[in-house]
Length: 392
Image (cartoon, rainbow, N blue to C red; front, side, top):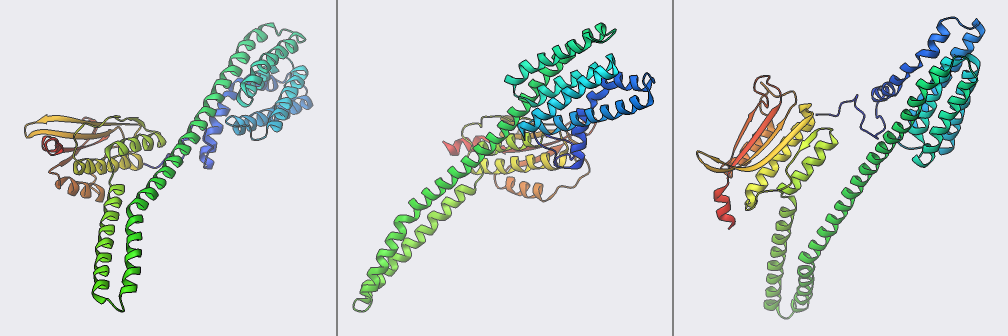
């Protein structure tokens, strides 16, 4: 499943014009509260010249508000520009309210929301009440504004402080994403260091011995060819053993493990926006070969969910189960996506079936919801009791 081009992750800047449009729509939907000044202009309560200026002022205010909230909710790219934009919005709200009257007091609600969305909490927590006080003060100078002031004070305070929470949530999400990337990088660095240490331990002694025996063979070669040949034979034996050790080490690095794949599945599903229910523990006594096959199966299943399913939720279960043929270890991956009815198995499932055959395992697939045919469930079963016996 490719990431929906219309969805924008929380705290993540839009990557396409369509995502930017969706984000702008979610911000602009709150402009429905601008109906009061729009109605005031449409009712013809002002001269044509004043109406034209009012339309221009309202468009400038809305444009500045959208740009400010769109660009600076997650992070203030330019604090000075943010403060200047807020000051401009506040001044424009004061000017339009005093010029056109009571219906325009609603602009202060948007000023309060902008403060909460773009400024740190330590600044916003006093500036939002100040904006509300200015709203009340401007309204006090206007006629018949008492009811509107009463109706706007609560939205101004609630909207402003609610946006401080949204801004904090967005910033926390960004920090968590950055921390996850940092942890992944540190893990990769640690793995490289471990690989370097292991290769040094594996090859350091062998290469030193090969170098020493090569020097000895070189000195013995003219006068003592028999002893030189013995040294060359030792070099061959040491090099072969070093090659075996390296191959064994590389095989161990390449072999997937269930704990690692479960953690990887959890991360991959979360990154794709899929709600994941993944177990944290692996049953004891699973043989290496069985674990490797199940790990490959889990990787294949999760890859299919992320790339092709369009699912919103995925559940992974891993537990022993008693069947008529004996006790088995069953791995099931179920999603609520579009399903795969009538789709022939691809190379991934074919290869997985072949892997399972090496451990006498089986692969079955079905629709997660039998009646609707929606969703896709993959079940891998391998004999478990024999694995326990061999492990012991």
